[in-house]
Amino acid sequence: MRIPGRNGGQRLTAEHNGDVSYWWRARGGFPPRRPSLPGPLSADVCIVGGGFTGLWTAYYLKQAAPTLRVVVLEAAFAGFGASGRNGGWLTSALPGSRDRYARGPGGRDAVLDLQRQLRETVDEVARICAAENIDADLVKGGELAVATTPAQLGRLQGGLLADREWGLGEPQARFLSAAELAGRVRIDGGLGAIYSPDCARIQPAKLVTGLAEAVERAGVEIFEATPVTRILPHRAGADDGARACTVFGDVTARYVLRATEGFTAQLPGQRRALLPMNSSMIVTEPLSEAAWQEIGWDGYETIGDSAHVYMYAQRTADGRIAIGGRGIPYRFGSTLDHRGVTQPATVDTLGRILRRLFPAAAGAGIDHAWCGVLGVPRDWCATVSLNPASGLGAAGGYTGHGVAAACLAGHTLADLVVGEPTPRTTLPWVGHRARSWEPEPLRWTGVHGLYALYRAADHAEDQGSDQTSPLARIGDRISGIPH
Ligand SMILES: Cc1cc2nc3c(=O)[nH]c(=O)nc-3n(C[C@H](O)[C@H](O)[C@H](O)COP(=O)(O)OP(=O)(O)OC[C@H]3O[C@@H](n4cnc5c(N)ncnc54)[C@H](O)[C@@H]3O)c2cc1C
Image (cartoon, rainbow, N blue to C red; front, side, top):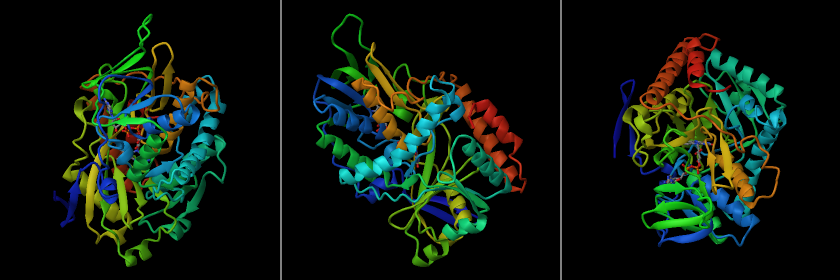
């Protein structure tokens, strides 16, 4: 489908729109569909959702206890959700607020531990990719948080000070001047950046496909095109376990683990648990050698700006720029996109950001646009939980930092099921609880109001002020977004 857009008179087009994401096209299409659940069955553990969270949980369960019968039920196909659509930042960024996690029983030390384990997770994923022969285009080039306005620069420097207070030294995060930044990547208007080494660029569909195959090799059964319609707890006094119900029959298991992140609101009783926040992406055609000479970016760092409505980008293995941002932030009633189809206005906005930051890419067409949902809890902090009495568990709510976090969260959830204490079972997201989101229409009004404030704040900051716009502070207060 051809989607027209405009850029100062120049028409932008996205050759493809939706089809889940460019990443699937790039790997040669969707994988062959696995069978649906053949009928009712019993398992030790049933995982609902075949994204990174569900698959990593299954992977580590089989590592720890190979004889367990582990079943994954996936509504579409493994990697259909955010795990096959994301920006490909395997980032150690914390999903949530340090201060909020520190209010838990582990206090500050537990937060430091979580930060350290997230950094180690980047190498853990690389190690498993090597061990399981998964080619995910993984390059550990680090992460650049870039400032293109004086106010953004102020926020970056403030963030670095906070990092120092939280024990992150120069090896974990350091400031780059405009000239140092330009030595790595020429970003138009780049005033400086924070460089963090603990991030890798990946191709998400390749990683999730390789992980699903590794999980199957370990003996996990994955049933696709099998939507779970209801998750029921273990009934006191009964001996049949918890249940995941489908039209093909129920799976009964000692534990049923929910790994549905941005899709969670579709399940009965979960409508206000995690807000399905939308994120949209475009990818260019391959850039010419001359364009890459001009841009640099030989280190394959992931790049994000520090706007309130921020962008995130990667240089792909096939010589393109993939760039994402918010687009429509949220759909009324927590409804979902249709296989990633995104609005022409969002294609246009992302195209303009691309051309502003990378003028050398202005001649490249937009090859594909798509979107997806990530899960946002009301306090913007992730959770890993398991209740032995009900037999129910869950992990998710990574607020857009889920690629590495899902690996550590899945490992944590598997440890909780196995029931032995490990360095992960005391992490501050274990048992963390957030309150529910507001009912509609408050939820829609609040999220859209927040992004209207953020857009206005970015616009005000673009005029050159070195202060964060008060509009953004109002937005943060209303939404409860932590800093
Ligand atoms: C456009 C975009 C860009 C992003 N960029 C980044 C990034 O660069 N770095 C980063 O760290 N994070 C990023 N994120 C967030 C990250 O991708 C997610 O947090 C992470 O992939 C979540 O993994 P998950 O397995 O928990 O959820 P998902 O990958 O969404 O998987 C959930 C699965 O559950 C299935 N499902 C849902 N309901 C049911 C049901 N009832 N029955 C059975 N199955 C069901 C779905 O089909 C889906 O496959 C991005 C997200 C998006 C949308």
